[in-house]
Length: 123
Image (cartoon, rainbow, N blue to C red; front, top):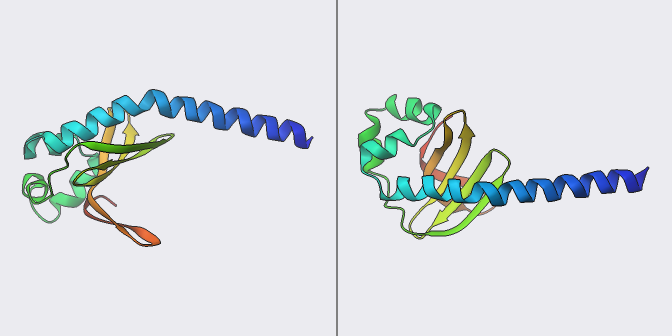
């Protein structure tokens, strides 16, 4: 019984690792487009909940304009429908939606053992 569970767990981990590898180019394309885009283009790459949260304070374009430039991709991690992209000047968190990969948080900096602190984020 334990061998079967170990095999299933191993197969699942291998499958998810394979999926992550196939998703990485799409995630990096969105991250690069967000990093290089003008404020209007950047807003179009945000997840709907993130746009809604930002627009409670003011226009999305104004909030995005205050976010640091991203720079080049240094590291990408994908876990199922969630991803993190470390850029030379920013860290982004993305989620897969029905419309493809969208940025849920940007302008993120590490906070020790606590969650990242992000300038742009949804609920």
